[in-house]
Image 1 (cartoon, helix red, strand yellow):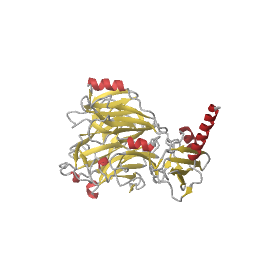
Image 2 (cartoon, helix red, strand yellow):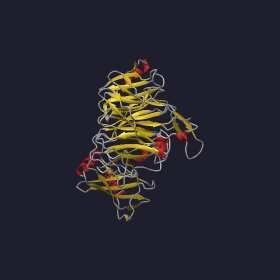
Image 3 (tube, one colour):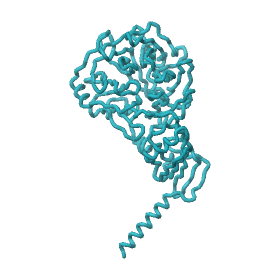
Image 4 (cartoon, helix red, strand yellow):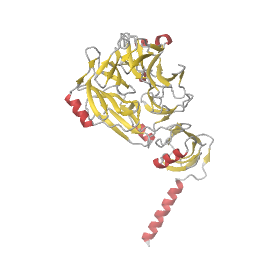
Length: 488
């Protein structure tokens, strides 16, 4: 009998607890909820990872959220944060392509529930079918160490996995992990430090190159593939840092020299051009969608860091003939930095040939270190330009790249705290209108981002998962065997 009474008491306690966790006669407010991340009014692709969120005010200890689709379907979650089932979320978003999701949020604090005004999320008719994102995670401490890593993330789930970490290659710095137009079958990566070199991987086969020659100033970095997969453009430079003591700025990143070269990956030959090896600093190459143009930024040499305010990059286009591996003789200045007193960097053409996205800042050829760096857009058909006010903030926006379908793009932003770059995604329509960006979803967003002491940089989309043989990479780096590239 005693055991029976204990079971009844336990059941009653469970029922009372369940009832206290469920909104009952909540106080209604006309205000929309303040949530983290801010997903109110964003546009998402069907099948993206769930937009899990917390209340912005940490005093709330429980949430109750109902999501209804304008074209059918409904979800309900109740817990410390809005934690949606992945399969149910995918089904709901796919059912509502071209429609919207309406969120009804109730939140509890001090035992009392409040129901907020509904907010909506648009489900775009433009698909985002790429597998995921690659990016480097690095503590913004401006030094080697802290287990720098290049990671990939399945954007349809919360699965993240390392491609390479510093634990596998101790003491090395690596970056410039670049697929060919989101296709990771073509991949290049630069390893700096002892045993450094340029990795070119095609269909799983790694080649390790020494891309520095007697005719070039440094090894390759800041890479970009030609759409044919036969060529890869690199900047050759060294990166330097200086630090401020004032509160407004803490860091200036600069290059004392920089040229652009193109590697023929079939023959391991470098293609040079008088236009790309000058006394000016040529940096951040990118091929056009048809492969007939090489975009890059160029600035006049000056005495850096003393004259750091004088670094103003122009955006330049140079013809390229893939059949012969030759360059045109006339460079076209699309945007003149010194004349406009601005700096134009990181040109990234959309793969459909419609748009050119780039960074604009007051100075510098390293926009992620510039607080005023914004994203701008050029219509390549008309050369009309505009500031992307829909995505810019009061802090640095940079490191942008396009998804394979040219309807979605990713960029890094320091908008949350001015120090740590995080990844945001946004959509662009036929008229060039851009949606409100959304922070890369995480399963437990506040817990994840509050405990994340890495900055994200150089994000890019990949159609499929990246496969790199780490053991082979360790062997190659340790052996220091490098194929020496030649000048054609």
